[in-house]
Amino acid sequence: MEQATQPGAPLPGWTSLAQGQQRGASISRGPAGHIHLDYGNITVRLETDEFLAFARMVAEAAGHLGDTTPLLPPPLAHGMGSSFSLN
Image (cartoon, rainbow, N blue to C red; front, side, top):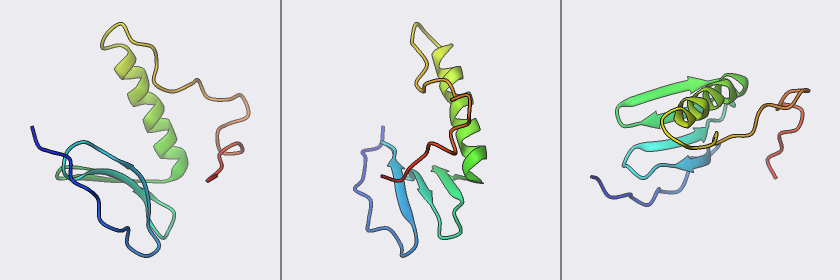
C-alpha cells in the first residue's frame, strides 16, 4: 500500500476539497468551477450538481457493502445547491 503524501500548495485559482490516502487521490475545484476527482490514472471533471449526485450514489453503494449506514445524509427537499456554503 502506498503512503499518503503531503499535497503541495494549490495552483492559483484551484481549491483543494479533499485528499485521499493514496498518491494521486484528490478532489479539487478548478478555476472554471468544475470539480476534478483524481484517483490514480483516472480524472473525472464534473459540474457541482453532477458531483453531488455522484457522491450520493457512491455513498449509497458503500452502505450496501456491509452493515454500515449511508455516509451522506439524504438530499434536502429543496436541493443541496441552495444550502451549500463555502464557509
